[in-house]
Image (cartoon, rainbow over all chains, first blue to last red):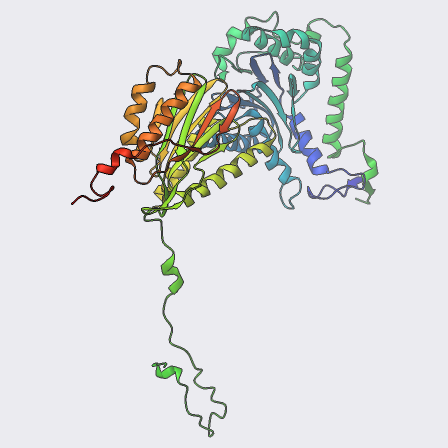
Length: 285
Length: 265
């Protein structure tokens, strides 16, 4: 068996210059269900697929409101996301209290990026196991940021995180032009749900139970639609199941997804990243 | 001479204490730190500035203050600037304690620098500066250690004019004409008559004239004022603080006043 000797803590580099604990944290995001965000000129939409651990249980919340002008979608460890969203709420209240202004989306996301980065170079701490999409409308317009446990933050027109999110990204890339020019919030939400739909596993459909929708924009305060309120948006879709499962056309995305799934299975079997043997030592275990 | 016997030392007893080390000599303990007594909260202002006036006009806001910092009734410093620009769209004017005002200037400058280093291109506008100042002033009064000032905050950002007041208690209000100190009694009625209802019509020239006339009245009436003053303008071009200007006054009428001119009886 191969054993990785460079993942015992988050502060030790491997000889090839990698921080394995941070990379594992990024893997944790991929274990979570998908969340999709997209921006038009004056609106930001976040949609997410909720999972329930068992039939009798509730679904894990995927969207959290930060302030009237800001909200987040999460993929990965939900408790970590709660800690981060509580911090963001505190920042937003501070901004209102001290300066009488809504917290800038960029300021908000960089403030949690700093927290996350600190974990990547403090011995004895672990990186956050959650990725966030941060949506906000402020004086500089509509913004969508992706936050990662590595502390990296990037702004996007469209972004997707979580399981099989590549399919959603593909949809967003193909429809970028129309999404950017979309005037109506309704259309933007439909695009978001179309992208989310592409991430669905074979036997799952979008239902009002497993789908969360939210929007924030110039004329709209951050609003989350859950449960029965989601049905109105699902009604606007031509189908609630994955296009690839409906008609059996061979999309190259499908292969990419299969590869991903295979990788994940490999990891579960070996308990680690399988294709990077250069940082491992052969042991007799 | 030292009247404390323990300070005198002891006679040496060679039999049991050849080097006079027992008991160890101690000087009388004062029991408390005498320097701590001198740490006090502000009880009163020391070096003070008098009124600040401000009005809203067509293109923005205009603020005026003289350049005197008094030490009690003594006209101690005659060339102190009491108007201060904060960022690119705000100006503040201070009456009250000048050292507290200098402290406020330094924390505001720090604030502007730290906002700049965020690098998100957002700049603090007059409304935000005013809110921040009110929090600082209220926070200090709640520690029973107020910053002894009355401040006017004015500016224009994104086409929006803003003018507001904040003082040592953290009290705030906003109006199209504002004045602090003695000016709130003498000049404010004049400013209201001249400005209210005409905020969107007054030209820069007219506004300047209104403020100059009020400053002149204040100089005649306020014994802590000076005939040298500055005017700050915030409009779409940003903040401009003028060089000190001299008021033209005539004191011929005063010759007949008892206590001023030649005494006749």
